[in-house]
Amino acid sequence: MKKVIIVLLGVAIVIGGYLIYDQTRFKIDDIVLEFNDIKEIEYGESIDPLSLIKTCSGEVTYQEAPNTNQVGKHEITFVVKEKGLTKQFTYEIEVKDTKAPEIVMTKEKDTLTYGSTFDPQKYIKSVKDPVDGDIEYKKDVKDNDVNYYTYQSDVNTKVPKDYTVQYIAVDKNNNKTEKSLKITVQKQEKEPQTTPSKPNTSSSTYTANPNNKVIVIDPGHQGKGNSAKEAVGPGSSTMKAKVAGGATGVSSRKPESQITLDIGLKLRNELQARGYTVIMTRTSQNVNISNQQRAQVGNKNNAAAVIHLHCDGGASSARGAHTIAIGKDNPYCPQLYKASSSLAQKVISSYTSLTGIKSRGVSYRNDLTGLNWSEVPAIYIEMGFISNSEEDKLLTDSSFQNKCAKGIANGIDQYFK
Ligand SMILES: [Zn+2]
Image (cartoon, rainbow, N blue to C red; front, side):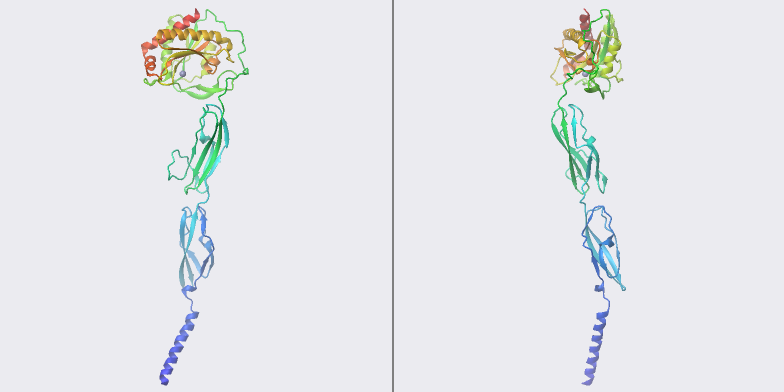
């Protein structure tokens, strides 16, 4: 019996000793790592994972810093070493892109003149994401597109009113920024009523010199238009393209500039044969002569008459020819009204009777650069509509072009009678 008690006592001592030993021994659960309360981090910002730790009982290392250029949840694994034991901790942090892209405009509102060109891109200084940098323009945006900017505009500079143009930038993570631009399109400017600063003051009516037989022919347009601007008349602040592009034959596909040149050269031959001295403003497509410079050709040569050749463009059903002279109230060269008007009437009547093209009579306009700068009688003749396939076929036909030349020459003869 005594033996048994001794054995039991021995067992009890061993167990008790183990329990005491076990309580003082360092265990894995004794490794402690506490985190700061940081749950989110901004897209693209750098982070030191150790800064997430509040306290740690041992020596801590981490396996990999999160890639903050990727939004969403990231897990960071920390390893703590203490007294020969290691323990892993994971911590979840979310990368969020809360910063929207930035649109910097050059202006927030602008006023445009009637008919001027509107370029929405002109008002953009920069579009940038604070992390990813420049954002590119995209024209056609689809539903799932990101990382672009675009704009919505219905500005029509031929419809005077107030417009709002909306610019939208979307970054890689779908953050959106919008900016708007206010555009006011002005009403069409009336022809200047006030006396131009450099007027052609000669109020006495132009009188023709009967011995002057110099005719300047200006085949309208040229191979390539020139959209640079020039004043529509001496002293005017109204600006127009130096040379417009011109119409194109609906079936011939010939540019107006080629048709006017072809007829112009035939008219030159016709007039020379009738004893006139002819000066051409151009004999080739490959020139760059503004409408003002074309008027100067007439002035410098003291022409008795200047004929600007053109073809009309418009609805496919539109047809007929007309001549154009300055109006009675032209502010630049009113002294030429009578002579120009007479020239315009003679030319349209002889042209249409010889060619059979319908007459639309004489128009009077004060907005044509080629006429306003003239110091000698000058007219435009719109020889027919090349937007009308029938008239396009006629005006591009060589033998018909000879008729056109003869018809115009007959009118010039009439004018001198
Ligand atoms: Zn034209």
